[in-house]
Image (tube, rainbow, N blue to C red; front, side, top):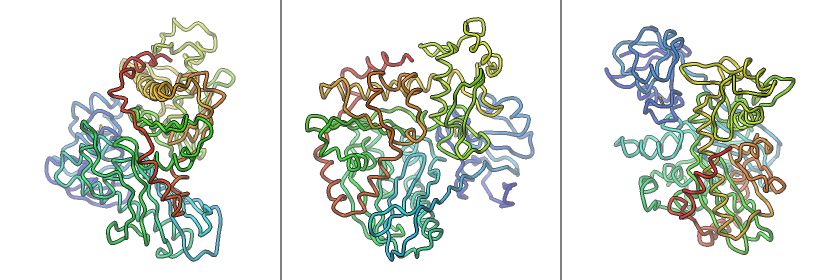
Length: 512
Ligand code: FES
């Protein structure tokens, strides 16, 4: 069967009955697929020609009648039965930012492989940050979270190799583009320091990650690695990988601990990294405790109808002004979707107006009592397919179901924080550092309003853009890399799923 890309003119070939998404993946066209191709998230929709191709039950459930009429179908439930053409989604190519020029002859590169985004920084001889580059992780086509990616390696005989190759290929592509745009030779990269969660470290090293997904959650490897390019073909003369602490506390959290120097903390410091998961570490009374919550990827935009990661055009701030909802997008582009921080802002406004109540229920118009609430209701809320939605633009909305996803995610993170603080005998730490994918644009007032943090924490919250990447930059210095290895033994991991208080707190903290 012939498949034509209407943007590039490229032609791909697939077998009869092969799923469209699989053919596209094989041809390095990685479209977003947060549910890993299970037909439940609706994010892999593509516009096809002809427009009257067969419709799957999942298409009927997840696409609007206008989308169906215009030829949109879910690529993961579309078996090839005829030649088709399609419009690809806009590819996010990423942007290289150059901060400083030097005459250095050698460089280091720090790489933070996030489940959603890969970020890297070019570093000069003296440790100065020179340039940065970030792109969406192309593995997003294999699910938004690490469990979907592990499942892919279990369900496909070549799954591990596919995910390993995609990651290697993307990292090398990014190193090449970063060095080229900076104007330094590729072979001038002496060292690459890599951090990531434990699953992605396994995929990078081509090691089977399945033991991470099943009790007793024992990863195959946690140790720090120093590898030559012959062992891991990354475009650098040496590749250093920070150690992981457990299946769900990865090298990215170790990097955070190095950066915030938890080992020598004089005060009680709680670091919460909110990305696709919510991982946290608390330094208190001379010990370090850590845990990980399966927060779900809502904060990074997955599982949310119009959710996006921190991409240009993502709505990252929402506020009320003169009885209207106003918003700001990343890069001041046209709105393409809703980032976690934008959704949290919007939710805070709706709670304030009484349109959503503390249980997460979205009121009917007749139940709203404030004048502003009624005005916003009239302007922005519509019922589509038996579901209430708050529209920021015709294409960007938050639904009642999305609000439930945020409830689950914020409760998981908040409950994890409470457990760590309780275990250390603390009510409030001296510092609460919020970092990770959500940290970049998070409005603290909104986060407090939706109950992501307890009001008593207000005075101690600091937002830091990306502690994991900063820690990786720091570990380009060999002494710091050596220091990172100590956290593997000094950090005490608390498994929340078996903690006696967690389930109760999780239910209790569900209220906004
Ligand atoms: S519906 Fe196709 S990837 Fe989720």
